[in-house]
Amino acid sequence: MERIARADPAAVAKAGWKIRASLGRTSDASRRLKQSESHPHCSARHSLVLSKVYRGMAWHPKGAGIGRDRNRLSVQVGASVLGGAPPRHWGNWKICSEAAMSLRPVTLNANAMSTNLRTKTWRPETRELLVARLGGSDQEADLTEPPNCGGVGRLRHFRRATSQGWPSNPIPIDPAERFLGRHLGEVAVAQVFQNLACNWRCWYCYVPFNLLSGDVSRGEFCTASELVRRYLEESDPPPIIDISGGQPDLVPEWTLDTLRAVNAAGIQNDTFVWSDDNLSNDYMWRYLTKEEVRWMADQPNHSRVGCFKGFDEKSFVFNTRAHRSFFSEQFELFRRLCQNGFDLYGYITLTSPSDSNIEAGVVDTLDRLQDVHQHAPLRVVPLEIISFGTVKDRLNRKPDLVAPANAALIHQEIAIAVWNIEMERRFTHAERAVNICDVEIAAG
Image (cartoon, helix red, strand yellow):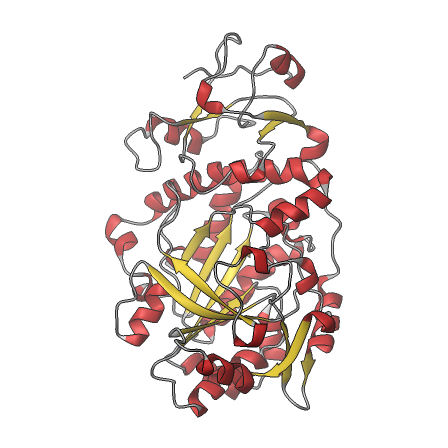
């Protein structure tokens, strides 16, 4: 495997190299990766070359090419003499400039957006929520099955299997199996409803932004009871209801009312309610009583997942367009949910436009999680970002975002390698082998 010496990108390009990735310094984690040829996520045959290139980053011109089917690669760091042809398996990679790499998204006023979106999408007098109408929407083309429940629902297939190098994804399958008392297999089907509101604008979100804006023309006002009724009217309703979005906790009453409706329908012993949360606001405690929060946390058929966006402030802002202060707020909200006794899990995305702080950022994120509880990282699943049709269309409309987005897709491969090594360093094999449902994260 050839490796590229530190050089100016123009000189590298002139020499005929197509750079795949870059790393500003030879970090401790990189050294460990290089030495870990027997590591399951570090194949000596497939090496991700981290070239020490000034002001440069490689990216693939076709976002779809950076996807789930390609080999997952390990890390090597080092310098060699420029010259010769790059390895054939590098494919069609190009250099993007530092200007594109350092693109700074416009910061949203997330708090103001939250207030506005809640007002637009929640009718407290009738307890009706504005849910997205998926039939005929820009999202419909990405669905594996047609919308159901009168056009406002869809079926989602949760899969344990992930790409090579990424941890398997046991949620919500394991929590659902634990509650239902039966095996769901490698793929579990869930009934999904999406609220038509989100206070962040993640560039990789599979939901079109026009289904996150509170636009009444793109949705339908329904009560939770009405949604449960439509769910039960389907020919073969799955055992999982996924309360999704958007950001469901802009209207925390939705989860509360759904659990009540499931109980009222007499299906609470056969229906598992999974709720998504982007960890962006405290509306649950602001708009629900302590008794209501406690009641939700006590429901055996309910679990929640909070999604952390990035591993440092820079990656967080790039991913969400929200203010950097919200990065730290995620961990405080996660802590608060733990203290309230919810059966709580986490996702984390590891995309970043920069490779300058990957190891330190991942290490700091794991430290922050362990500050919530020593075992909290064992309940957090890293998610690989893949370009769905909606994302490709979004990037096509914003060409200045293409280069940093493609760079971020590569950087997540470095970040997950660091994450895997850190998890092995912090936890024993036995601790990592425990069923995610059995990981204790009581209030810390």
